[in-house]
Image (cartoon, rainbow, N blue to C red; front, side, top):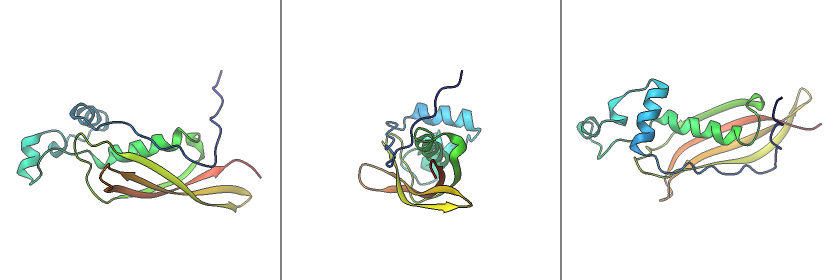
Length: 138
């Protein structure tokens, strides 16, 4: 039996996945196949001019996907685009947010437009994006 779809609300709860640990980076490298050593090997990171390893950009994208699918069923996500604006250092605790900026009707379907961000505790925005989701209703 299928679980009922989560109720769509007019605000999107933020996602706080916790600190990006070295274990998180190693597990994401294995799951994604992205073994770029700058993300998992401190010597490689330092050789590239960084103080330490930092998160894969696609890890932040994955968290944004989770933010959206915690709010609406995956089938309602029509568009998702982002750009990376800063790195996410190891041990950072990013906060992922989506803000509904408008709802329009296209071919009889209501669609919500969202602005997406990932932000660190010091206010650094590491990711900016947009999404469009099918909105339930008329």
